[in-house]
Image (tube, rainbow, N blue to C red; front, side):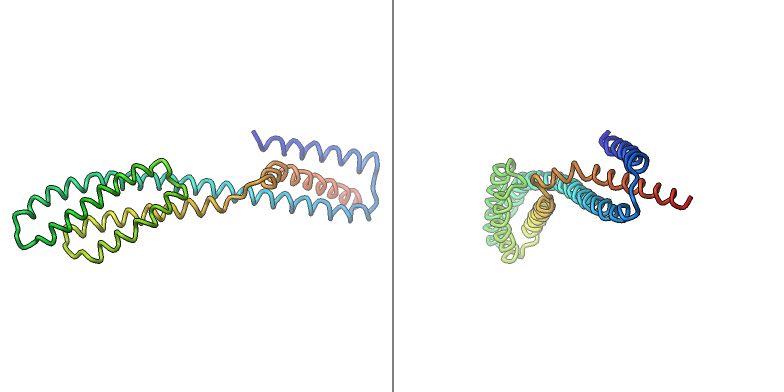
Length: 221
């Protein structure tokens, strides 16, 4: 596995440093004091790379989570906007026999058209999910739906509108979350360099520190 290679470097580096810096070419105290600059610097750079890797892994996991939630909410919204016009058609038949609710009949027709149009748009944008075009699309349709709710007080129609409005807001929330975690990811050559060399830098830093500990123990003896 991946962690075996840094561990192997740690063992080999420790052996090499012990052989060359202690047995064959022993160094003075000043050298070992200066070594502190080296192993501390390598350790900090290695830990920085590890933290970048951790941040990217975390962002990727949360992005994937919200991406799956986005797809689920989006598909549910498609099903709702496909089903609701059929329910409203049945409700419209009842309204036709009531002379006192002609205004609601007009609003019912209006909501049926809105939902049917929305459903066709949702199907078109389904393949662009999580892309900027979808974000722009939802920004453009959320306001008309809110306006419909403010101008409509009839409960049966309002309930349908509230349901769709809630689902629209949920999709928008998940879009924002996907966008946020995508922007948090670090990309580029520097990231990949730090990702692959940071475990080895930490391993070498530990090997240097272990070698210095051996020198300090021998001095006490």
